[in-house]
Image (cartoon, rainbow, N blue to C red):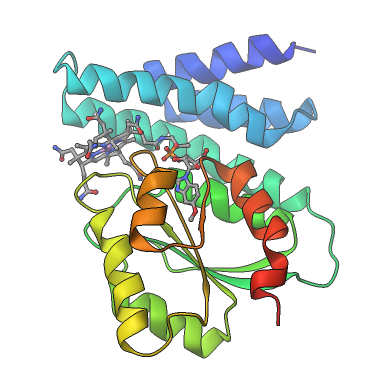
Length: 220
Ligand code: B1M
């Protein structure tokens, strides 16, 4: 049986080589070896994809290569997402969460990890996908009787739409109805404070902690 480090190395190589089949195979190995799938996402997939993001920034690689790397990551993520969800115990749900990536933003990998982690921790997650316009977050929250609206943004231009959702809620007189949590690579606690979000999470594990620790603020 391969060690965790060997499996992570294979995961990293699959992203660097844009190899979907190898990424899926390495993800299967994570499951077979009983490794923590959240840690595997971070160590095996997120690290190399972030490095490729930096290479893209320096124009050492170009967009098609970043797309191929993201495709490889998604092939492996499908398997790990199921493993993350399966790790959760089936008990009464703690609350209903509306999750999405904001308008104009197609990045969905981190958002999907957050959703899977919340589901594994007994949250009923309604994932609206990507490029979600502000009114759609609110309609979905109202029709699902949600407790929490969780918004992901990966671009410094699209994080502004997190504020739009909060302003629209206030304009509709719904400013206090939902617990709002924001996250994504350019998002910070300062930004969350500035736009009046109730919580900020740096990663998927913290997203669970933020909701759990503020439960008295949003639980019915
Ligand atoms: Co894009 N991209 N991208 N990209 N991309 C970034 C974000 C960028 C930093 C790369 C760079 O230039 N260095 C840069 C943004 C610069 C900026 O605005 N500051 C960038 C750019 C510019 C772009 C395009 C504009 C490129 C172009 O077209 N010229 C374009 C945008 C298209 C659009 O959205 N309209 C674009 C496109 C793409 C791809 C399609 C190629 C692909 C996305 C594929 C997909 O998601 N299906 C892609 C990728 C892969 C990246 C990088 C390299 C990696 C993102 C990722 O998946 N990380 C990224 C570089 C980076 O982030 N350093 C980059 C792994 C993932 C597990 O981490 O998403 O950070 P992350 O999620 C974490 C935390 O952030 C947090 O928890 C997650 C798990 O730990 N989190 C939350 C996320 N959401 C949360 C919500 C929460 C709480 C925590 O509560 C609600």
